[in-house]
Image (cartoon, rainbow, N blue to C red; front, side, top):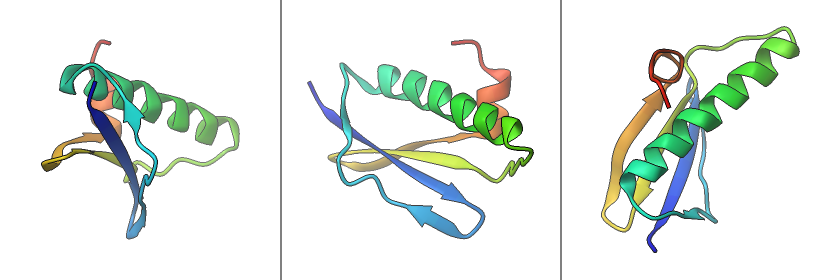
Length: 78
């Protein structure tokens, strides 16, 4: 199975994912990114803060292939 990296960005700050996650395919990685962004947003709301600039850039061995935004996470059925 391929490895996918989930690079988090909030505003101008970027946190690289050095470890990655082994998933069956790109579709599974996109699904995981949607779930992860929702979880981050939920925790932020519980803490009384929200920053809708949050994004997860998905990368595989070929580079970044998808960016999941807060809007995507709120609007897309998983």
